Length: 212
Image (cartoon, rainbow, N blue to C red; front, side, top):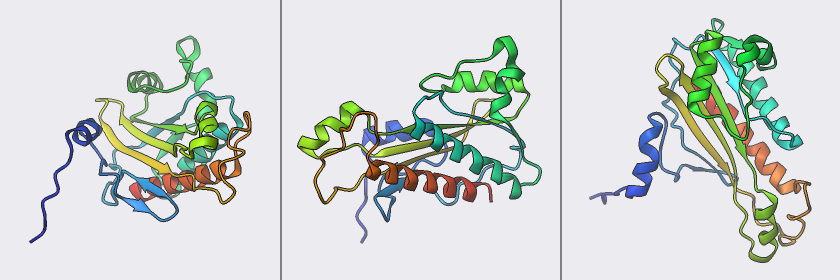
């Protein structure tokens, strides 16, 4: 007889509002990767006009990551020829005086307001979190470095409904030479960049599968 596994209240509290694609963190993959979306999740066919939003950043590694995600989103049109994507670089021109300054994060309400101004039906919001300097410094002593996290949320503009939500976590493996060098100012350690690359790849694969 199979034992009954009960989810903790904290996990239920976290997963409840996500509406779509939330599963437990035991979906571990090779290479220290995990994600929350299930293979069965599919983006509805009524998603036809899509805008891409992500936070404004001056960090080279983050900007490169967002540009990779943006490029991968444009490639989805090859799977759905009817899909139209608003070029993010034209947003300030389109929004004019009503444009929003996308800061450290993009909240759902602002994304929906932008979408209504643009006349689109959906918006995809990307977010990337990497270990910050204040988190990398203790790693030298304690060897506890947070994973790289890449989030994807697709909202329906008309209702604000979350049609797709995925959190990819990419663990930074314990280095053979210890955790020295992880507090090297603003320069990202190669192992952190490698974890980012793995997280971005899985994020793009999951999104591509959802648009199948």
